[in-house]
Amino acid sequence: ILENQNEFPKSIFYYSKALQIVNKTNNFNRKGILLNSLANVYLALKDYSRSKNIALQALRLSEKNRLDAIRAVSLSHIGENEMLQEKYEQALPYFELAKSIFKD
Image (tube, rainbow, N blue to C red; front, top):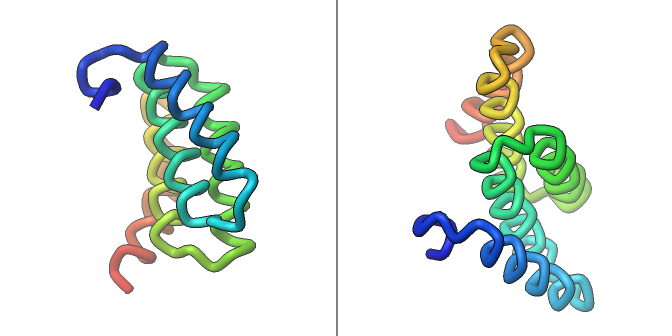
């Protein structure tokens, strides 16, 4: 909600706090959701490097724990990150892989 109101610093703060809490559990699905949400905030702030690094964390987590929805969202974030930097050829494989996951 804060993210939608352009309150990005607060969004980052609360997502980070939530990650600290979820890191104490084995709720990998929730962690993946939080990581992707945080990556999305940094993407909106045009901090492409940080956004991609966080999305890659979510991607690795999703692959390790077989979380297909998290994986597809992570791949979409990485693709969008590349696209916004006009790296279209690098973005396309991420989008294609995400699409194939969403189809299943």
